[in-house]
Image (cartoon, rainbow, N blue to C red):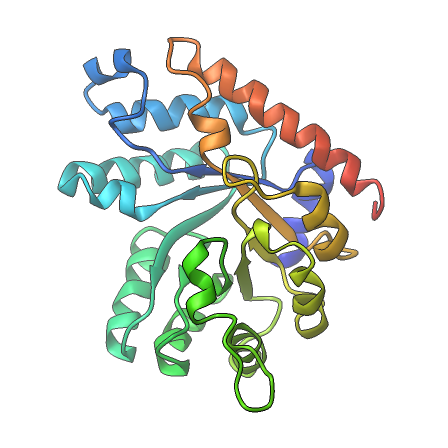
Length: 274
């Protein structure tokens, strides 16, 4: 999926919502544990209930890898289900990979060849040769970690060099030598507030994947005020605030209602650019 197609989906659905599939078998409704594949059964219900309200799904690999082979199989089934039934959805493998070149090449082969996923999150710490193997696939996206929501992000990402340049700013500037806004996005946490202004000075046209809205306390209004572009430029993720709002047999309907509330807010924000 290219940038224009992504924007067309945003306009059509009046939404830039990404539903995070952080599926924990200890948190899903108890009645699903009777299913042959509880994780996939949960994901399928959530996807069917929200697919018209969002433009992306983001399975977090940690939640699937924690269950070994069964978890990986549920992940693959989830990806295939989305691709077969809702091909307009942008799929993000939230894997945070990034290693020496030949290892990154194998990670890239896994997600872009074997699974044919649209994008993968990548850690930039090891530099150019750990990122560029992901960039050799036409039509695929790297989503590079830039400025995260977690408290510990301040330990490194906000540290300054002798010229006053912060580490996340260095990541943004340097990585633009490797790719452009047609194949690279950046992760920026919703709790960063006005920091989006600084980010937009460096990457004015790139899409940003924004976690942290909802359960983590990020403000959608603030993200849009400081981070939205004329092409929206935002994919805002909500995980717990949508998928775990109910643990009864009505969980999917409750998730839909939660997603609808976010989508309605997003439609209001999009009026400024559409």
